Amino acid sequence: MPPVLTLSNISKSFPGVRALHDVSFALNAGEVTALIGENGAGKSTIVKILTGIYVPDEGEVHVGATPRSFSSPRDSWAAGIAAIHQETVMFDELSVAENIFMGHMPVSASGLVDWPQMRRRATELLKRIDADFGPDALLKQLSVAQKHMVEITRALSHEASVIIMDEPTAALSRNEIDDLFRIIAQLKAEGRAVIFISHKFDEIFRVADAFVCLRDGEKVGAGKIADVTEAKLVSLMVGRPIDQVFPKRDIAIGGTVLKVEGLSNATEFTDVSFELRRGEILGFYGLVGAGRSEAMQCLFGMTRASKGSVTLNGQPLRIASPGDAIGAGISYVPEDRQEQGAVLPLGIRENITLASITSHVKNLFVSRPSELLDVRMLGKRLDVRAAHWEQRLGELSGGNQQKVVIAKWLAAKPKVIILDEPTKGIDVGSKAAVHDFIGELAEEGLAVILVSSELPEIMGLADRVVVMQEGRIAEVFTRGSWSAEEIVAAATGARKAA
View 1 (cartoon, rainbow, N blue to C red):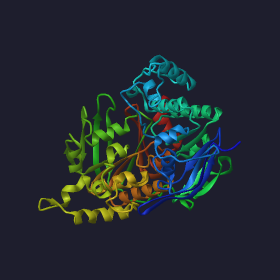
View 2 (view 1 turned 90 degrees about the vertical axis):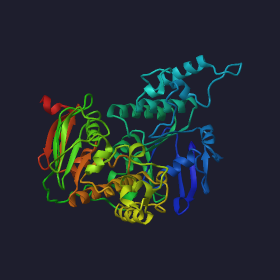
View 3 (view 1 turned 30 degrees about the vertical axis):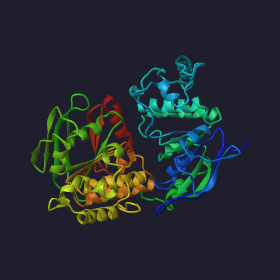
View 4 (view 1 turned 180 degrees about the vertical axis):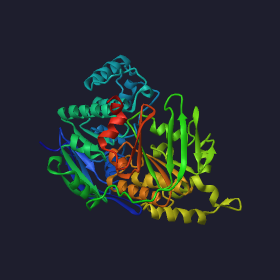
């Protein structure tokens, strides 16, 4: 049986950057192919070529045995290719049925939209994937996982033969991920080819049948998932084995910098109390909804506390806004870097100096040389890879965007830095670089709060771990006196029950 889709010798370049060079691979019916590689390896460029956003400079795309050229997303859609992105691209104010059939709504003999037929067909499609919502629900009322289900249903409505899933589990809970994988199994059984893009190796080994690995725009490996190990994939992705993923440094921890007592919010967390010391990495761990991020956002002034006190270097703080926190020396790198951490249409320079722009004002004007001095220093220190410092941030890979967001807050010269899921959605090589840099910050005497859902990351980097469960601190563990089982038990409430 011929492949459903074949890429042959695909190359694509942009000014100053070669994104892809001579990449070839095929997708088979009823098979999930994991497309893996570091951020900047070329995965997104492949997806954009397949979805008609980019046209390759060289090479061909065949759907079945037919060569196809996509000059727009509509061409790709017509060829049976559908993409489900990490950030859903639909219409919040419209119903589920309207989103499913947007662009190809059924019409009656009179040429008007056939609403009864559209609702009926939408109901049938939703039943096929066991959706727990109906066609009349407004999209804005759905969870991220349910919105992914709408996108999958939209692909089914068009009988797509190739479905691309780009980091589909990034914002999902464990149960929601299980539901997604159940749907992927259904798609395989129906003979559809699935491209699955994820940085999570446990998901890749669970759901994929085959893999294609890209590095620096070139294909460096491909084959069956059953024939490789995690260590082999890491080596292919980064071009070297990573022996030390969490480079914990031996750092002398100093006196208390930040003291939080009884911090509470009416709905999200209660009585959060802890101390943070100079040179310490304090981990916050918990399941989805535990209140970790909400407590950090309150500490940064994004939301108001109902009660509690905050002391920085012995001085009481009143934090009513992020400006108050920044002025006091507290920086916050948010989990959602694209929505809260960066301004993607602006350049790298503008993003890095955004939180410290007043320090570059000379005689009432912003000094470009002063800005560039900081940008070059921080960009080099964090190994930000870009064509130039004026390049739009939105053009960079996820890993490089995250480095720019971290650089922005370091430019503000904080005393305390809060890193909320700093390696979410970035590749293994960029993760290692961020982990190493976190260690550097602590070594330089910065007080670091690390919020992470990845237990190996927390255990590898933190000196102490605060475990939250249902909005409260369940337990605090000290390095050397913990185990993964104890931390998870505290996060789930099992330890308390025992």
